[in-house]
Length: 257
Ligand code: SAM
Picture (cartoon, protein in one colour):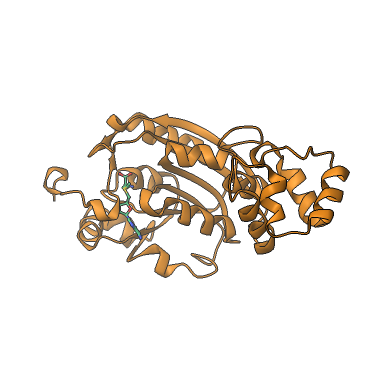
């Protein structure tokens, strides 16, 4: 099957990456180690071609038409076990871990489930790093630091398990069909796993109304006198906004309250 004969399916978030310079930047940014690569949504296989050149790949593709195409394109790699292709919804396949050996996630993600996939990978003890293309706005949230307007739960969760940085911003023209929004590739290198549900519950309360003060948001769930003690201990002003507090202070606050 030729690329031209493939009609992209909107419902699966299919925007195929055709700019080879971006594909090369993704491969260059991959952590250098012995881990397997997991690719979610290989699509037409443009990124997969680069990945199987470097390492063994475990891929998950939901679209049965694309799965057939990939089985033809990568017959040799599948026969030699360089590529293992799972046809089906990755979210259905994902238990506590997605595969049972250490892996690095490398993917141009389907945007409609990108945040969900990244949060699952952050919690997956087998996942060691995440190098993904997503909507620029989403990448900025994961990579944000305290003080930035977009700093929120996603940035705090990420900083609690490792480090994150934007690798390259990508315009719509890099894709076929072109999305309406800008995209970015970013990398999270993990040193721990996301695990503390109560901490994340506190973050949800802290950012309920991002423009209100942190004290006002937290008072909805936590005892005010306890909060006042904690704020004074951490030298946080009563007017501080949720995005102005560092990840370290959020962890201290959690311990105290
Ligand atoms: N990797 C290709 C590229 O860079 O050109 C395609 C990327 S496209 C943005 C997203 C891919 O994810 C599509 O191939 C789509 O069919 C696949 N996909 C969407 N939802 C999925 C799911 N739940 N499980 C597995 N793959 C999915």
